[in-house]
Image 1 (cartoon, helix red, strand yellow):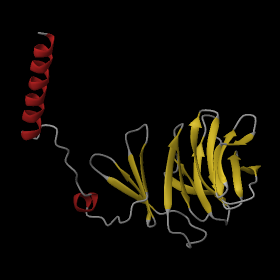
Image 2 (cartoon, rainbow, N blue to C red; image 1 turned 30 degrees about the vertical axis):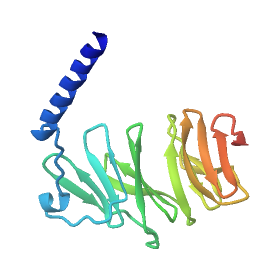
Image 3 (spheres, rainbow, N blue to C red; image 1 turned 90 degrees about the vertical axis):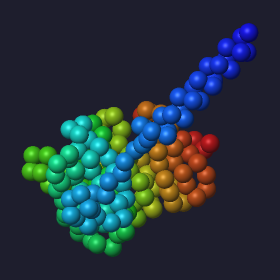
Image 4 (cartoon, rainbow, N blue to C red; image 1 turned 180 degrees about the vertical axis):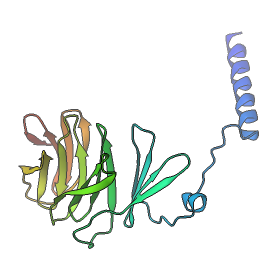
Length: 193
């Protein structure tokens, strides 16, 4: 009796899902911002959404801010144009854009523009921001921290740092040529995993 009741519920669920998908109730529609707004934004590198509801998209030509009914394209004040990628990161009400050649830009909401705050002039691979606003930057020279206009090495590696990402709120996973490391941002200790 229990198997018959379970079978009845499964059949009902299958029929309901079949009905939902056949009616396209859950269909997601995608629109091209290029055709909606009459702009030309190609090769988007990253997208994020801020706490005000704006959607931000980055490409080599600049940063696009979208709202429901309008858009704005920000040109970044590059010091060097020898890069191929611009990425965005939004955390703690702060928006940053950074290039693979080490230029970091901060979006100033008061002046409604991006400002260059750091130019490493090195290969920059990744950037993450902790809850205290400290920027952790992965470069070809190692892992650096940046806060209040000061750049300092977190520690140097014997090989290139390829990527960083959060393991938890106190530890960063660091992928390098010679392995994967766990780095504690409070004690600044590292261990290979």
